[in-house]
Amino acid sequence: MKHEVREEVGGFVVAFEGDVDLQTSPDARKVLLECVGRGKSVVVDLSGIGYIDSSGVASLVESFQTARKGGQNLVLASVSDGALRVLKLARLNKVFTICDSVEDGLAAIG
Image (cartoon, rainbow, N blue to C red):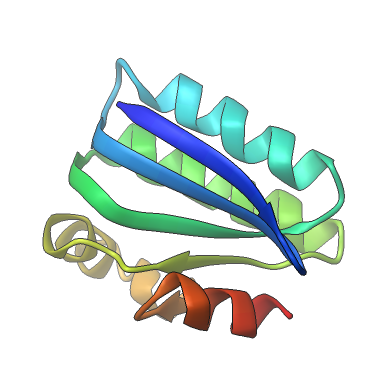
């Protein structure tokens, strides 16, 4: 899994590419929590995700909860079909704000 973090007006955009699984989810968790810990809202770009398992989903949920406690937003953007299937199975599509594009995500956190 690769990731890229960039700062935008209103928050961070974190883009992941590859699989987020038991092996790579600790890195994803660390990146997301570091961004949330910097006091800004986060847009998570999941367009490059081929596969996400329960550990990856747990990293997203923990980051979402941490952001909410800090008064920030964490939204998902450009969610790949594979990742969206997993989120829907866990009914997390009802919990997360899911935007069609990163630009829409930035508007949602702004």
